[in-house]
Length: 493
Image: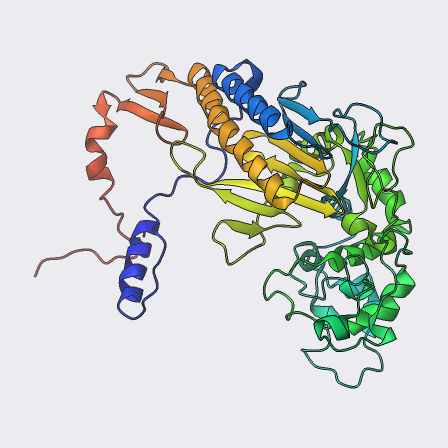
């Protein structure tokens, strides 16, 4: 039975008993690439026009930024020269940051760090299984609630049900914070000013890497995190949790007998030649210093401690899409959703924030855009992977005039301008490579293939088998159903 038939039957069934609607499945092109990614993007006229428009948009929208730096980059896996390499050096900036901003200028990238941690875990596939409970690697988690009298699903995480994959995809549903961004650490009288109940000393971490505050240690975690109740039972709904990546850092250290930083350098940064990326700021002055610059996040480094340049972010994303550190099958598995959100347009990966765009191609097919955003202090940015077109983008900012609303509005403009042109480039190259009339040697069988201007991929314009038009007889062929092998012969009385 075809999917459309099943859907129609289901829709008819539920419509008689319920008031909700089933989404339409009448438009169902293939998910994923429908043509090879273009190999010469920069030479395509449609792409050149789109890039020129993006450059003008960038210049117009950064010219009024007094203290906010912006770096926008894009690269195709098939070209050495970046497709976009745009930077804004604001008139007002830290005196320690003297150079003009370029692709090697280092920003803090906040939660983009989670993608590096996830990749580090995946490089240990011979030692770590995604479906394993985290207690296999960090058995001390079972002791977090030791001595607690009121143990229930509401107050106590069942760590034996939390897997490595659950931590990586925010499905562990554990307490989200402990030190970094923990409101309990703020010097505010929560009781008098806001009416909250007072916190006792065991509920205040007293660490977190805030400027002027010491970083949290592993000892702090096991002493304090047991005070955090679960948000949901594991695998209920995605709950963004920085602490999940803290625990993944513990897993890496347990398996490798190295520090998280040592293994990250050995397994990810050096193999990808990411010389402007790390957990410590570079010593030169091609940097963007702001509050939080130089603050060590301690055990929260796997969640948000990285520094990186635009060039390195693009190289990191390219290394992922090129399967430099994983097998192609591992990469394809990694770049898939693991759960969804209540928004039909947003899914969740490990640790990807996946936007599902349906309005960037002429045929309105779904394009999955894999992103990892980050924010720490005045630093806000996002890295973007678009596997369907072998594209990597990054947009990083620093200053008082930025925020996620600004970054995502800008990124949306760039993608909506760029992807239709990239799609056209794919069709132009496919037209010269694949389109034409093919004939089976020594026969009268031919097939003509052309690019579908209004739809996805290639289409069969005509197909003759020994002189018979398949298009003409297809209505008959499509209705033929083979008889089951076990059918009884038809007899007449």
